[in-house]
Length: 423
Ligand code: GDP
Ligand code: MG
Image 1 (tube, rainbow, N blue to C red):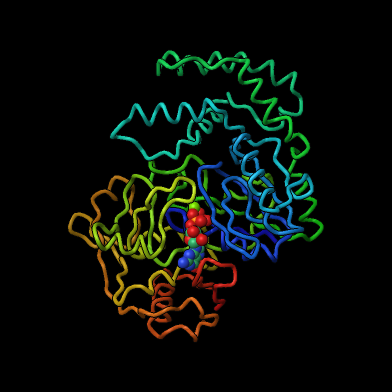
Image 2: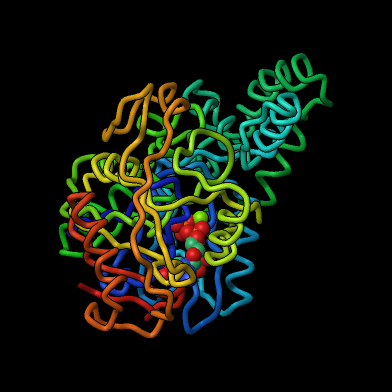
C-alpha cells in the first residue's frame, strides 16, 4: 500500500503530528520534496521534536525513513538535526535512514545567495526562509548542483568543485559584490558534513520497489501545502518544489508505482507564513486572538503566522490538487476560544461571487465572503469520539465536510498524539 499525506492549505496544517500518528501503521516513511525550509512539530511520549529534514517516522522504532531524490538536503543542517534527536534518545542509523543518491545537496553558498537576494529586495522581499531552497533548486535545473551520490566518490566530486565555484562566483562576486566562495572551503565542507553520511546514501528507488513487492506499507510525507506547490500554488509566493501527492512517487524514487490513497491535512482555520495573497486574512485584534489561541508562530523561524478563518474556496482547490480521498481536520480545539465563528465560503472578484480558486493575479483583487456560525466555546480537547463533541462543533465539522465535498476521517483536538477523533 502506498499512501501520501499532504497539506491542503498553505502549510503548517499539522502534517508532522498526523504523520506521527498514522506512521504507526507504516513500515516506511518517505520525504519526497523540499528541504529544511519547513518545520514539523511532533509531541509524543518521548518529548517534543522539531523536524526539518527527517521524516516523522524517525521517531518510531522499526520504521525506515527515506529522503527522496526530489529533496534538497542541507548536509550541515542534517548533521545538527540528527545530533539534536540523538541527544533526545532517538536512534538514527543506516538501518532506519536511507538517503537517495539522486537528492541534491544544498550548499552554504545557496543559503548565502538566498540571504543576499532577500537583502537586495529589501522591503519588496518575498519572505524566503533563507535556507537556500530556491537557489539550490535553480542550480538543480541548471544542472550545476551536487548530488548526494557524488559523496561516495570524493575524488570525482572534488574535480567538479572548481568549475562550479567559478560559475557561482560570477553571481556572488560579479552580481552581488560579495566575497568569493573558494573551492577549498567547498571541499572542506564535503569532508566535514558529507563523509559521515556515506553509509546512508543508496538507490532508495530500488529499496522502495523491493519493499513494496514484499508488501510493506509506504507513507509519503509532504512538507508545505498545496498552495505552496511550484505549479499549482500562489506563484511566485510558493516553494520551489512540487508539494502535491501526485509527485510523491517521483520525488521518492518510485515513478513506476501508484498511490493507493491520499490523505489531506486541512486546518480548521487558515494560516499563512510570509508574503502573498491570503484572501480570508484577519487583521488587528481578531487576528491576534486567533494567532494566540492557535500558537501560530513558525516552527522553523518563529515568525508570527498570518491567520484567518477556514477558507472553503482555497481548501476545495487544495483538495483537488492533492487528489485527497479523505481529510484529517486539525486544530479544531483552537476554535474553542470563540463563541462565534466565521467561514470564508466564497470570494468576491470584480463584483462577482466566485467559488473556484482563481489565477494568482486575480487573487489579489478577491475579497472574502464570510458566513457566521455559532461556536461551542468550551474545552473539547478531552473528546475522543465524534458524538462527545458539542453539537456546534459537530455541525462545524459537518459543514466543512459538505462544503469541501470530501470525507473528513480524523479530527484533531490537541497537539498530542492521542488527542484526536476518528470518524
Ligand atoms: P506542519 O508543518 O504541517 O507539520 O505543522 P507545524 O508543526 O508547523 O504546525 C502545527 C502546530 O500545531 C504544531 O505546533 C503542533 O504541535 C500543533 N498542533 C497540531 N495538531 C494540533 C491540534 O489538534 N491542536 C492544537 N492545539 N495544536 C495542534
Ligand atoms: Mg510547519
